[in-house]
Length: 432
Image (tube, rainbow, N blue to C red; front, top):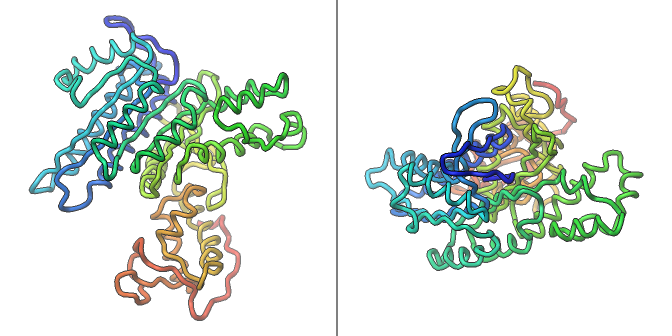
Protein backbone atom coordinates (compact mmCIF):
# COMPACT_ATOMS: atom_id res chain seq x y z
CA UNK A 1 0.00 0.00 0.00
CA UNK A 2 2.30 2.73 -1.26
CA UNK A 3 1.44 6.42 -1.32
CA UNK A 4 4.78 7.70 -2.57
CA UNK A 5 7.29 6.83 -5.27
CA UNK A 6 9.52 4.70 -3.07
CA UNK A 7 12.42 2.75 -4.49
CA UNK A 8 13.44 -0.79 -3.58
CA UNK A 9 16.61 -2.63 -4.51
CA UNK A 10 17.61 -6.10 -3.41
CA UNK A 11 20.43 -5.64 -0.91
CA UNK A 12 19.79 -1.90 -0.74
CA UNK A 13 18.41 0.37 1.95
CA UNK A 14 14.70 -0.01 2.69
CA UNK A 15 12.37 2.95 2.10
CA UNK A 16 11.13 4.79 5.19
CA UNK A 17 7.59 4.15 6.43
CA UNK A 18 6.17 7.31 7.97
CA UNK A 19 3.81 7.10 10.92
CA UNK A 20 0.73 8.11 8.96
CA UNK A 21 1.34 5.17 6.63
CA UNK A 22 1.78 2.84 9.59
CA UNK A 23 -1.68 3.96 10.73
CA UNK A 24 -3.12 2.92 7.36
CA UNK A 25 -1.37 -0.44 7.60
CA UNK A 26 -2.84 -1.06 11.05
CA UNK A 27 -6.34 -0.27 9.81
CA UNK A 28 -5.88 -2.58 6.82
CA UNK A 29 -4.69 -5.55 8.89
CA UNK A 30 -7.27 -5.08 11.64
CA UNK A 31 -10.12 -4.71 9.14
CA UNK A 32 -9.22 -7.77 7.07
CA UNK A 33 -8.94 -10.01 10.13
CA UNK A 34 -12.16 -8.70 11.72
CA UNK A 35 -14.28 -8.75 8.57
CA UNK A 36 -13.25 -12.24 7.53
CA UNK A 37 -14.22 -13.51 10.97
CA UNK A 38 -17.62 -11.88 10.48
CA UNK A 39 -18.08 -13.47 7.06
CA UNK A 40 -17.27 -17.00 8.19
CA UNK A 41 -19.51 -16.96 11.24
CA UNK A 42 -21.96 -19.38 9.54
CA UNK A 43 -21.63 -22.66 11.54
CA UNK A 44 -21.63 -25.20 8.68
CA UNK A 45 -19.34 -23.46 6.20
CA UNK A 46 -16.58 -25.72 4.83
CA UNK A 47 -14.67 -23.26 2.67
CA UNK A 48 -14.10 -19.53 2.51
CA UNK A 49 -13.17 -17.90 -0.81
CA UNK A 50 -11.78 -14.40 -1.20
CA UNK A 51 -9.60 -12.43 -3.61
CA UNK A 52 -7.34 -9.69 -2.27
CA UNK A 53 -5.91 -7.14 -4.70
CA UNK A 54 -3.20 -4.56 -3.98
CA UNK A 55 -3.06 -2.24 -7.00
CA UNK A 56 -0.02 -0.24 -5.79
CA UNK A 57 1.80 -2.88 -3.79
CA UNK A 58 5.35 -1.58 -3.54
CA UNK A 59 8.18 -3.87 -2.46
CA UNK A 60 6.64 -5.16 0.75
CA UNK A 61 9.16 -3.97 3.38
CA UNK A 62 10.02 -0.64 5.03
CA UNK A 63 11.99 0.83 7.89
CA UNK A 64 9.85 2.74 10.40
CA UNK A 65 10.62 6.46 10.50
CA UNK A 66 12.88 7.43 13.39
CA UNK A 67 14.02 3.88 14.08
CA UNK A 68 15.71 0.85 12.55
CA UNK A 69 12.60 -1.31 12.98
CA UNK A 70 11.65 -3.28 9.88
CA UNK A 71 7.95 -2.97 8.99
CA UNK A 72 5.84 -5.07 6.60
CA UNK A 73 4.15 -3.48 3.63
CA UNK A 74 0.57 -4.12 2.55
CA UNK A 75 1.22 -7.43 0.70
CA UNK A 76 2.66 -9.04 3.84
CA UNK A 77 -0.07 -7.45 5.96
CA UNK A 78 -2.72 -9.07 3.74
CA UNK A 79 -1.05 -12.48 3.94
CA UNK A 80 -0.53 -12.23 7.70
CA UNK A 81 -4.10 -11.02 8.32
CA UNK A 82 -5.51 -14.08 6.55
CA UNK A 83 -3.27 -16.36 8.64
CA UNK A 84 -4.50 -14.67 11.81
CA UNK A 85 -8.14 -14.83 10.77
CA UNK A 86 -7.88 -18.50 9.82
CA UNK A 87 -6.32 -19.38 13.18
CA UNK A 88 -8.97 -17.46 15.13
CA UNK A 89 -11.87 -18.85 13.11
CA UNK A 90 -10.74 -22.46 13.43
CA UNK A 91 -9.55 -22.53 17.03
CA UNK A 92 -12.86 -23.85 18.38
CA UNK A 93 -14.13 -25.76 15.32
CA UNK A 94 -14.15 -29.54 15.12
CA UNK A 95 -13.96 -29.27 11.33
CA UNK A 96 -11.69 -26.41 10.22
CA UNK A 97 -12.77 -24.04 7.47
CA UNK A 98 -10.50 -24.13 4.44
CA UNK A 99 -9.33 -20.65 3.45
CA UNK A 100 -9.12 -20.38 -0.34
CA UNK A 101 -7.64 -16.90 -0.85
CA UNK A 102 -6.07 -15.49 -4.01
CA UNK A 103 -3.71 -12.53 -3.94
CA UNK A 104 -2.85 -10.11 -6.73
CA UNK A 105 0.04 -7.72 -6.00
CA UNK A 106 0.51 -5.14 -8.75
CA UNK A 107 2.99 -2.29 -9.16
CA UNK A 108 4.15 -0.50 -12.28
CA UNK A 109 7.70 -0.02 -10.95
CA UNK A 110 9.87 -3.05 -11.83
CA UNK A 111 12.19 -2.54 -8.86
CA UNK A 112 9.24 -2.80 -6.49
CA UNK A 113 7.87 -6.04 -7.91
CA UNK A 114 11.32 -7.65 -8.13
CA UNK A 115 11.96 -6.81 -4.49
CA UNK A 116 8.49 -8.02 -3.50
CA UNK A 117 9.03 -11.42 -5.13
CA UNK A 118 12.38 -11.67 -3.32
CA UNK A 119 10.70 -10.75 -0.01
CA UNK A 120 7.85 -13.23 -0.47
CA UNK A 121 10.32 -16.04 -1.13
CA UNK A 122 12.36 -15.01 1.89
CA UNK A 123 9.19 -15.07 4.06
CA UNK A 124 8.18 -18.55 2.98
CA UNK A 125 5.66 -17.73 0.26
CA UNK A 126 7.82 -18.79 -2.69
CA UNK A 127 5.85 -21.98 -3.35
CA UNK A 128 2.65 -19.92 -3.72
CA UNK A 129 4.05 -17.52 -6.32
CA UNK A 130 2.30 -17.93 -9.67
CA UNK A 131 -0.25 -20.08 -7.82
CA UNK A 132 -2.58 -18.27 -5.47
CA UNK A 133 -0.08 -15.40 -5.09
CA UNK A 134 0.39 -13.38 -8.27
CA UNK A 135 2.88 -10.51 -8.63
CA UNK A 136 2.50 -8.32 -11.73
CA UNK A 137 4.77 -5.54 -12.91
CA UNK A 138 2.04 -3.50 -14.57
CA UNK A 139 -0.39 -0.60 -14.24
CA UNK A 140 -3.41 -1.60 -12.17
CA UNK A 141 -5.84 -0.26 -14.78
CA UNK A 142 -4.35 -2.60 -17.39
CA UNK A 143 -4.96 -5.63 -15.17
CA UNK A 144 -8.28 -4.74 -13.53
CA UNK A 145 -10.48 -6.31 -16.19
CA UNK A 146 -8.72 -9.67 -16.01
CA UNK A 147 -9.00 -9.67 -12.21
CA UNK A 148 -12.73 -8.93 -12.40
CA UNK A 149 -13.15 -11.86 -14.79
CA UNK A 150 -11.07 -14.09 -12.53
CA UNK A 151 -13.18 -13.28 -9.46
CA UNK A 152 -16.49 -13.82 -11.23
CA UNK A 153 -15.32 -17.07 -12.83
CA UNK A 154 -14.01 -18.36 -9.52
CA UNK A 155 -17.12 -17.30 -7.57
CA UNK A 156 -19.94 -16.94 -10.12
CA UNK A 157 -22.77 -16.68 -7.57
CA UNK A 158 -21.23 -14.23 -5.13
CA UNK A 159 -17.85 -12.92 -6.15
CA UNK A 160 -16.00 -11.48 -3.18
CA UNK A 161 -12.91 -9.31 -3.49
CA UNK A 162 -11.23 -6.45 -1.65
CA UNK A 163 -9.23 -3.98 -3.75
CA UNK A 164 -6.62 -1.81 -2.04
CA UNK A 165 -5.88 1.19 -4.30
CA UNK A 166 -3.36 3.45 -2.60
CA UNK A 167 -2.73 5.88 -5.43
CA UNK A 168 -0.18 8.68 -5.05
CA UNK A 169 -2.50 11.47 -6.21
CA UNK A 170 -6.19 11.55 -6.96
CA UNK A 171 -6.61 10.43 -10.57
CA UNK A 172 -4.53 7.28 -11.09
CA UNK A 173 -7.61 5.07 -10.76
CA UNK A 174 -10.60 6.45 -12.71
CA UNK A 175 -13.93 6.48 -10.88
CA UNK A 176 -15.52 4.60 -13.76
CA UNK A 177 -13.08 1.72 -13.14
CA UNK A 178 -14.05 1.62 -9.46
CA UNK A 179 -17.71 1.81 -10.49
CA UNK A 180 -17.20 -1.19 -12.77
CA UNK A 181 -15.62 -3.18 -9.93
CA UNK A 182 -18.50 -2.32 -7.58
CA UNK A 183 -21.17 -3.14 -10.16
CA UNK A 184 -19.74 -6.37 -11.57
CA UNK A 185 -18.48 -8.09 -8.40
CA UNK A 186 -21.40 -8.46 -5.94
CA UNK A 187 -19.20 -8.76 -2.85
CA UNK A 188 -16.60 -6.17 -3.84
CA UNK A 189 -14.97 -3.58 -1.63
CA UNK A 190 -12.48 -0.86 -2.47
CA UNK A 191 -10.10 0.88 -0.09
CA UNK A 192 -9.00 4.05 -1.90
CA UNK A 193 -6.61 6.88 -1.06
CA UNK A 194 -7.35 10.32 -2.50
CA UNK A 195 -4.86 13.18 -2.11
CA UNK A 196 -7.39 15.94 -1.56
CA UNK A 197 -4.76 18.43 -0.39
CA UNK A 198 -2.90 18.15 -3.69
CA UNK A 199 -6.08 18.83 -5.62
CA UNK A 200 -6.94 21.84 -3.45
CA UNK A 201 -3.41 23.23 -3.81
CA UNK A 202 -3.68 23.47 -7.58
CA UNK A 203 -7.37 24.18 -8.03
CA UNK A 204 -8.17 27.64 -9.48
CA UNK A 205 -10.28 29.34 -12.13
CA UNK A 206 -7.24 30.16 -14.28
CA UNK A 207 -7.31 28.47 -17.70
CA UNK A 208 -10.29 26.39 -16.54
CA UNK A 209 -7.90 24.50 -14.26
CA UNK A 210 -10.56 23.68 -11.68
CA UNK A 211 -12.76 21.89 -14.17
CA UNK A 212 -9.83 20.01 -15.65
CA UNK A 213 -8.69 18.84 -12.21
CA UNK A 214 -12.20 17.76 -11.20
CA UNK A 215 -12.69 15.94 -14.50
CA UNK A 216 -9.35 14.18 -14.04
CA UNK A 217 -10.42 13.12 -10.56
CA UNK A 218 -13.66 11.71 -11.97
CA UNK A 219 -15.95 14.26 -10.28
CA UNK A 220 -16.59 16.90 -12.99
CA UNK A 221 -19.87 18.13 -11.48
CA UNK A 222 -18.77 18.29 -7.83
CA UNK A 223 -18.99 22.10 -7.53
CA UNK A 224 -22.20 22.40 -9.57
CA UNK A 225 -20.75 25.14 -11.77
CA UNK A 226 -19.53 27.43 -8.96
CA UNK A 227 -16.25 29.24 -9.51
CA UNK A 228 -13.38 28.85 -7.05
CA UNK A 229 -13.15 32.61 -6.40
CA UNK A 230 -16.86 32.71 -5.60
CA UNK A 231 -16.44 29.85 -3.12
CA UNK A 232 -13.42 31.51 -1.48
CA UNK A 233 -15.34 34.77 -1.17
CA UNK A 234 -18.58 33.41 0.26
CA UNK A 235 -17.66 30.25 2.23
CA UNK A 236 -16.14 30.60 5.72
CA UNK A 237 -13.85 27.58 5.17
CA UNK A 238 -13.50 27.19 1.43
CA UNK A 239 -11.26 24.12 1.62
CA UNK A 240 -13.73 22.26 3.85
CA UNK A 241 -16.60 23.37 1.62
CA UNK A 242 -14.93 21.95 -1.50
CA UNK A 243 -14.15 18.71 0.35
CA UNK A 244 -17.78 18.43 1.45
CA UNK A 245 -18.76 18.73 -2.24
CA UNK A 246 -16.10 16.32 -3.48
CA UNK A 247 -16.67 13.46 -1.06
CA UNK A 248 -20.35 12.63 -1.78
CA UNK A 249 -19.76 13.12 -5.50
CA UNK A 250 -16.76 10.78 -5.42
CA UNK A 251 -18.54 7.95 -3.63
CA UNK A 252 -21.56 8.37 -5.90
CA UNK A 253 -19.42 8.12 -9.04
CA UNK A 254 -17.74 5.02 -7.61
CA UNK A 255 -21.12 3.32 -7.22
CA UNK A 256 -20.79 2.38 -3.54
CA UNK A 257 -23.91 1.95 -1.44
CA UNK A 258 -21.89 2.19 1.78
CA UNK A 259 -18.76 4.12 2.61
CA UNK A 260 -16.61 5.62 5.34
CA UNK A 261 -13.63 7.94 5.27
CA UNK A 262 -10.39 8.40 7.22
CA UNK A 263 -8.86 11.87 7.08
CA UNK A 264 -5.07 11.57 7.29
CA UNK A 265 -2.51 14.33 7.73
CA UNK A 266 1.06 13.62 6.66
CA UNK A 267 3.83 14.67 9.03
CA UNK A 268 6.08 15.76 6.12
CA UNK A 269 3.72 18.61 5.24
CA UNK A 270 2.58 16.97 2.00
CA UNK A 271 -0.96 17.77 3.10
CA UNK A 272 -4.14 15.88 3.77
CA UNK A 273 -5.56 12.88 2.03
CA UNK A 274 -8.54 10.58 2.34
CA UNK A 275 -8.53 6.87 3.06
CA UNK A 276 -11.96 5.77 1.83
CA UNK A 277 -13.67 2.42 2.29
CA UNK A 278 -16.32 1.67 -0.35
CA UNK A 279 -18.58 -1.36 -0.15
CA UNK A 280 -21.92 -2.77 -1.21
CA UNK A 281 -22.98 -4.09 2.18
CA UNK A 282 -23.80 -2.34 5.46
CA UNK A 283 -22.07 -5.11 7.42
CA UNK A 284 -18.71 -4.32 5.82
CA UNK A 285 -19.16 -0.65 6.58
CA UNK A 286 -20.06 -1.43 10.19
CA UNK A 287 -16.92 -3.54 10.71
CA UNK A 288 -14.76 -0.71 9.34
CA UNK A 289 -16.46 1.81 11.64
CA UNK A 290 -15.76 -0.42 14.64
CA UNK A 291 -12.09 -0.39 13.64
CA UNK A 292 -12.19 3.42 13.87
CA UNK A 293 -13.26 3.09 17.50
CA UNK A 294 -10.83 0.27 18.25
CA UNK A 295 -8.00 2.46 16.93
CA UNK A 296 -9.28 5.50 18.80
CA UNK A 297 -5.88 6.24 20.32
CA UNK A 298 -4.82 7.97 17.12
CA UNK A 299 -7.84 8.62 14.88
CA UNK A 300 -10.02 11.71 15.08
CA UNK A 301 -12.81 13.16 12.93
CA UNK A 302 -14.43 16.45 12.19
CA UNK A 303 -18.18 16.72 11.89
CA UNK A 304 -21.09 15.92 14.16
CA UNK A 305 -21.54 12.91 16.43
CA UNK A 306 -24.86 11.70 15.06
CA UNK A 307 -26.55 11.51 11.67
CA UNK A 308 -26.50 13.88 8.69
CA UNK A 309 -22.88 14.92 8.96
CA UNK A 310 -20.05 15.34 6.45
CA UNK A 311 -17.93 12.55 7.81
CA UNK A 312 -14.17 13.08 7.97
CA UNK A 313 -12.19 10.70 10.14
CA UNK A 314 -8.66 11.84 10.73
CA UNK A 315 -5.18 10.74 11.74
CA UNK A 316 -2.44 13.16 12.69
CA UNK A 317 0.93 11.75 13.82
CA UNK A 318 1.20 14.41 16.55
CA UNK A 319 -1.95 12.95 18.15
CA UNK A 320 -0.67 9.39 18.15
CA UNK A 321 0.31 8.77 21.77
CA UNK A 322 2.92 6.28 20.56
CA UNK A 323 4.83 9.11 18.85
CA UNK A 324 4.49 11.94 21.40
CA UNK A 325 3.47 12.71 24.94
CA UNK A 326 0.60 14.91 23.79
CA UNK A 327 -2.95 14.02 24.75
CA UNK A 328 -5.81 13.73 22.31
CA UNK A 329 -7.28 16.81 20.67
CA UNK A 330 -10.50 17.26 18.77
CA UNK A 331 -13.27 14.70 18.45
CA UNK A 332 -11.66 11.30 18.83
CA UNK A 333 -13.03 7.82 19.43
CA UNK A 334 -12.89 7.58 23.21
CA UNK A 335 -15.41 7.26 26.01
CA UNK A 336 -16.50 10.89 25.82
CA UNK A 337 -17.22 10.62 22.10
CA UNK A 338 -19.04 7.35 22.65
CA UNK A 339 -21.38 8.98 25.14
CA UNK A 340 -21.89 11.97 22.84
CA UNK A 341 -22.65 9.67 19.90
CA UNK A 342 -25.28 7.73 21.85
CA UNK A 343 -26.85 10.92 23.23
CA UNK A 344 -27.00 12.49 19.77
CA UNK A 345 -28.54 9.38 18.25
CA UNK A 346 -31.14 9.43 21.03
CA UNK A 347 -32.09 12.92 19.87
CA UNK A 348 -32.34 11.90 16.21
CA UNK A 349 -33.73 8.35 16.10
CA UNK A 350 -37.24 9.20 17.39
CA UNK A 351 -37.84 11.55 14.46
CA UNK A 352 -36.84 8.74 12.06
CA UNK A 353 -39.32 6.40 13.73
CA UNK A 354 -42.19 8.88 14.05
CA UNK A 355 -41.87 10.08 10.44
CA UNK A 356 -41.76 6.56 8.96
CA UNK A 357 -44.85 4.88 7.45
CA UNK A 358 -46.94 3.44 10.31
CA UNK A 359 -44.41 5.05 12.69
CA UNK A 360 -42.13 2.02 12.69
CA UNK A 361 -38.80 0.96 11.17
CA UNK A 362 -36.80 -2.28 11.06
CA UNK A 363 -33.51 -1.71 12.89
CA UNK A 364 -31.29 -3.09 10.11
CA UNK A 365 -33.08 -0.98 7.50
CA UNK A 366 -32.78 2.16 9.60
CA UNK A 367 -29.08 1.53 10.17
CA UNK A 368 -28.33 0.75 6.52
CA UNK A 369 -30.18 3.87 5.35
CA UNK A 370 -28.41 6.31 7.65
CA UNK A 371 -25.08 4.73 8.64
CA UNK A 372 -23.00 6.42 5.92
CA UNK A 373 -23.36 9.80 7.58
CA UNK A 374 -22.64 8.74 11.15
CA UNK A 375 -19.40 7.79 12.94
CA UNK A 376 -21.37 5.38 15.14
CA UNK A 377 -21.39 1.64 14.49
CA UNK A 378 -24.43 -0.61 14.87
CA UNK A 379 -23.85 -1.41 18.55
CA UNK A 380 -23.97 2.29 19.41
CA UNK A 381 -27.24 2.62 17.47
CA UNK A 382 -28.61 -0.34 19.44
CA UNK A 383 -27.50 1.22 22.70
CA UNK A 384 -29.33 4.45 21.81
CA UNK A 385 -32.52 2.55 20.89
CA UNK A 386 -32.32 0.54 24.12
CA UNK A 387 -32.08 3.72 26.20
CA UNK A 388 -34.99 5.27 24.28
CA UNK A 389 -36.99 2.12 25.04
CA UNK A 390 -36.18 2.45 28.74
CA UNK A 391 -37.43 6.05 28.62
CA UNK A 392 -40.66 5.01 26.92
CA UNK A 393 -39.94 6.98 23.74
CA UNK A 394 -39.99 3.88 21.49
CA UNK A 395 -41.06 0.26 21.65
CA UNK A 396 -39.13 -2.69 20.28
CA UNK A 397 -41.01 -5.60 18.70
CA UNK A 398 -39.09 -8.87 18.45
CA UNK A 399 -38.57 -10.23 14.94
CA UNK A 400 -38.85 -13.80 16.25
CA UNK A 401 -41.96 -13.51 18.45
CA UNK A 402 -43.80 -10.50 17.05
CA UNK A 403 -44.23 -9.19 20.59
CA UNK A 404 -42.91 -6.15 22.41
CA UNK A 405 -39.61 -7.12 23.99
CA UNK A 406 -37.10 -5.80 26.49
CA UNK A 407 -34.42 -8.24 25.33
CA UNK A 408 -31.20 -7.28 23.54
CA UNK A 409 -32.02 -5.63 20.21
CA UNK A 410 -31.59 -7.76 17.08
CA UNK A 411 -31.19 -6.60 13.51
CA UNK A 412 -34.66 -7.71 12.41
CA UNK A 413 -36.49 -6.12 15.36
CA UNK A 414 -39.03 -3.38 14.65
CA UNK A 415 -38.61 -0.01 16.35
CA UNK A 416 -41.97 1.72 16.65
CA UNK A 417 -43.66 4.65 18.36
CA UNK A 418 -45.29 3.65 21.65
CA UNK A 419 -49.06 3.65 21.96
CA UNK A 420 -48.74 6.38 24.58
CA UNK A 421 -45.89 8.80 24.07
CA UNK A 422 -43.99 10.48 26.86
CA UNK A 423 -43.16 14.15 26.80
CA UNK A 424 -39.69 14.59 25.33
CA UNK A 425 -37.37 17.38 26.50
CA UNK A 426 -34.02 18.36 24.98
CA UNK A 427 -31.17 16.47 26.59
CA UNK A 428 -28.00 18.01 27.91
CA UNK A 429 -25.50 16.38 25.56
CA UNK A 430 -22.65 17.59 27.74
CA UNK A 431 -23.65 15.33 30.62
CA UNK A 432 -21.68 12.17 31.22
